[in-house]
Image 1 (tube, rainbow, N blue to C red):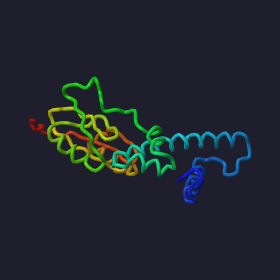
Image 2: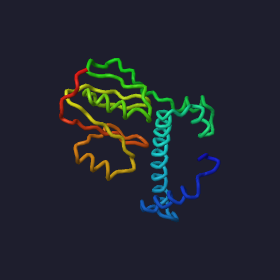
Image 3: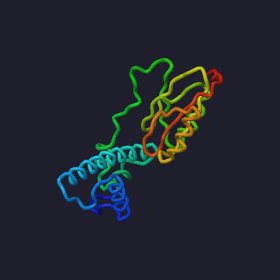
Image 4: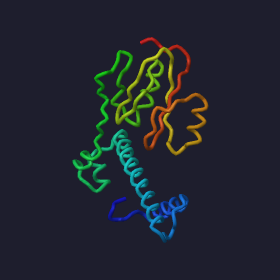
Length: 185
């Protein structure tokens, strides 16, 4: 959705419903009404920036090129890379003997890699574009990746002992120890 198009009618409709549900006056009549609208608009802008950054990171992890991302956003490959290239690097000078960088991994192969790592006691403690930082333990681990939109599933999994590693559009990553001894490498 480009700035020139001003959003789709459906987006505008949903946004209007959200603003209404937040108790913001549909037809502002006072300075206080306008200030409330400004506050909500600022929150929406902040959340949209976060969502866009996370969507770009997810697209990169899925193998999208900077050219494709730039084209989608109506900018050059270089402009997209300059704006969205992550400063989050898997190169950790303080990485300990019981830590590793698992990567490069993409959305398509990261879960298979985590299944294998989990058998040997490695569990994810940090996630970034194309990598997981994993920590060694004495027990086997399992990892899961679910849609961020499935809040009820996330809550149910947490009730079953799953721990959230990170939520970033479009996924929430979770892990749990199986309590059985890890395989020896």
